[in-house]
Image 1: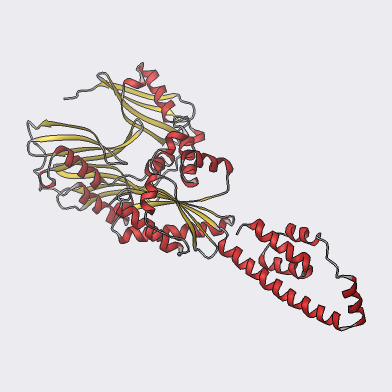
Image 2: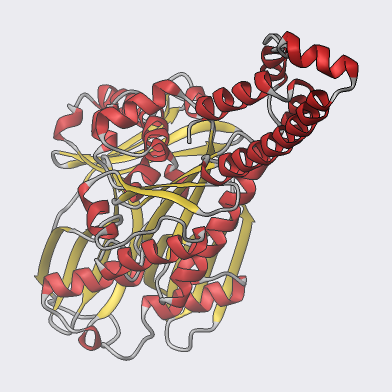
Length: 485
């Protein structure tokens, strides 16, 4: 029942029988003061003259009228309470969006019972097919929805990103509900041996955002994330293009320092499959995560007894972007099976740091030599800290460790953005940005100054630049010829 229908019914009863009692009932039910004032302005219907005279005489007519009035009053109070209970039961208290690529909107009442579960796109229709979630508990509905996403392949074994958005007039209640849902979903993923991260947001009512969401067939929660990604891109990404991205891609665009990437193991598996190799016959020599143009990629090097393989794997979706191999004329690297894998070396470093390998952002995992000893050089971020390790490649022992608090990235509005920084470097080098191979473009700090560290290839030369992140000035530049052999 709509709010205005409830109010209209209440006014009618108030005017007939209970002008004073109604105000108290409405206050008990938490109605707005403006509604009470409106009701009090309604005229009180007087009794007919004959009944009024009988009442003054104290006659039987007055007594019967009083009994009738009391009965009507009791009935009206009961009806008001029934309407109030119905209003609380059927009115929407919170709107919840769950986005992966399927986008599902759930509306619940104050008692966290589902009033509706709506598919906002075709993938969500697949997820909700055959389900009737009305009047079930919210946690049961979430369990069913996440289970269906797993069953239908929208959540895979690793690298999942789930956006949960909660809209509630009471901000504290919205945040509490969001936290509860995050814990519930994390528990479901863990119970299914699936890794992923949940981004929880509380939303305020926003007509402009709601219209953007409707126009693009997405949830308000995904629209808010898309809007943030557009702002972070400095205008290079349109809202329509952002709306078409997956939550994981949007997360990487909106929060580039906290993106949800595939694990190193998943990237290696993709490279092995593309190269047609078996894990037991390869040495995993290099695993380096960096941003190349508009993508985050893993640069991988796999070695066999006969050849080396260089592979670029999209860090968000596992797509193999580049694959090349060359025969090894002189194999100076350890034979397959004589050293631990990169994943094992990373696990040893994470265990020493007291963090979960599934929750880190890997920056580097490279097999190298140090004074005749094979080691893994490992760098990663986790829990607001940056870690650097050297791990013995044969025993897995920790040889060196270093950790520092992670430096906060400056706000997007404070810096010129990667595109302008790269343009400044290319202009100084006298090359076209469209003709380069970008190796690195990273926002960092140098002696307290925010800078972009940029590396790229153009022609037969390699360039390294430091660009002031606020002014775009060239602070340092180097270039030298490279050899692709």
